[in-house]
Image (cartoon, rainbow, N blue to C red):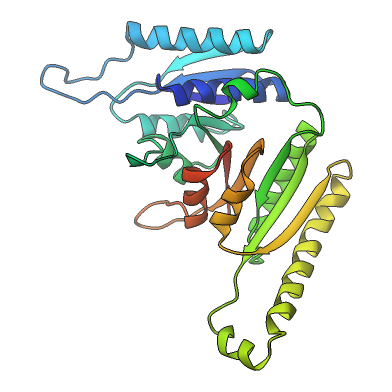
Length: 292
């Protein structure tokens, strides 16, 4: 389990969330300090360590150890010229990271989109699942573990038949089973524009399409319910915009899970509009899972 730290309240919230997850998984926690140093004539080479870095890492390690007594905590400093590339190299190294946890400022009504200069590029390109945590999320609520069965996870699926849902469902069911949590699976859809005129002639066309989508969702989820019989599942197909519907479902959830397609494009990786919406607006931690 790995958490990124840059000294912001959001990054300390990420460390606390990661400590909880590391304890749950019985894994050690590694805290990586990330700071970008602008190069100037006075400082032609970025320093590899500073007293401030050491103090931040020590504070984060003490906090994690106090929250989770007995947790194995280590720290490393990745400060340098390009912290995003350095963090990516650490995260995607084989066998190094199971889950990366970073701080996120989400959407601020005054300043606009403020996920973070390091967090967003890492989420868009990482080969590992990344969880984004805000400072107001679990700082108090996660002081104590949720009672078994009291927490709910929300998972968004798209049902496009590309195999993407398999990776998302595997992650969602595994996390729900690990936490003894309920799993709410949401697929949001809207009637294609081409159906508008046809629906005028046949008002029942929308109901027919809704029934087909609900059946597809049920068939998609059924094998996973068989594999995880102890996970309580609610799967619903709702009419609406996927990003908005997932945001509406996020208050009170322990984790909101969405996918991100792996893209091999000349312009580099990017996040889809659904992932963007939930990262900036969701009222709970967000896990972004890369998939085909």
